[in-house]
Length: 362
Image (tube, rainbow, N blue to C red; front, side):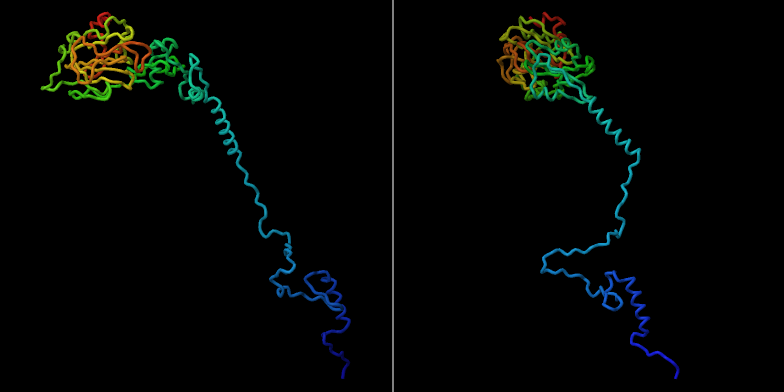
C-alpha cells in the first residue's frame, strides 16, 4: 500500500491544529463574546440562552444594563431660526405699545376749589387720550351753569355734555361737576329734554312735573280754565308768579324756564286759573314743585319751593298762593324756577309778559 497519514478525530494534523488554535486566540482572546478554554480555541457564547436578563432579588441592588453610547435616532434637532423680518416686526410692535402707553394718558388738573373725593381724584387722574380732559369743580352758593362757564371760559354746552345734564336741569350746591379743559368742547351740543311727549290731548297725572301732561278737561269736569288767548301769548293774561322778585336769568336752549329770586319764604302764586295736575317732590331736580293746567294748550310749572300750599286736583284761581319760595332740589340759592309750556313743551315765559322782566317779577 502507499504511504499515508492516520486520520485524527479533529480532522487535521497536530501542527495544523496548533496553528489554527494560535490564530483564533490572536484575534478573539480578549473578546467578551467568546469563551476561552485552556489549551483550546475560543468558541462563541450562546447569548440567547441567557436572555432576557433576570435581576437577582436577593441582592436588592439595581440592575444596570450598559448601553453602547450611540443614539438609535437623531439625538439633536437644530433650533429653527426665526426670520429676521419676524424679529423686527415683534420688536416694532413692542415699541409701539410702550410709546402708546406713555402718550395715551394725561394727568388731570385738580378741582378749582381743591375739593373732590379721593375716588374722583383717582378716577380722574388718568384718562385715555381719545377722551377730552377735564377738571372738577364743586358748585357753590349762587352758581349757575352760565356763571361757571364764564368763570372757566368754556362752552355751556360742554358742561352739559360732559356731565350728562338734560335741558333745564340745574346744578346743586356741594355737587361736583366736570369742567372741560378745551374751551370749545360742546359748542354745538344740545341736550335732551325731560319732556316725555306732548300728550294726546287728555290730562295725565304722572309721577313728576315732566310726566304730568296738561290736556283738555272732561266735558263734565268742573275745572275752571284760564283765559283763552287763541294762540296769542298776551291773550292768556298770565300774572307774575313771584311778586317783588328780581330777574336772575332767562330762557335758553339749556334752561327751560326763568329764575326769579326773592327772600326765602316769599309767597308763590298761580299765574292763571286752572287745575293742579302735579304737586310733590321732583327727583329730577325741581324739588318741591307744582304744575297747573290752564287749558287751551297752556300750563305752568313752579320749582324749588320750600313748602307746598296746594294738592293734586285742587282748583286754583289767578293769584292764589300755591307755595313758598325756597331752594330745594338742584338749586344753588333761593329762587323760583318758573316755566310756561305750550302743549307740554317749554317756551320762553317772557313772551307771555310782553318781553318785560318787570312785568313777570311784579
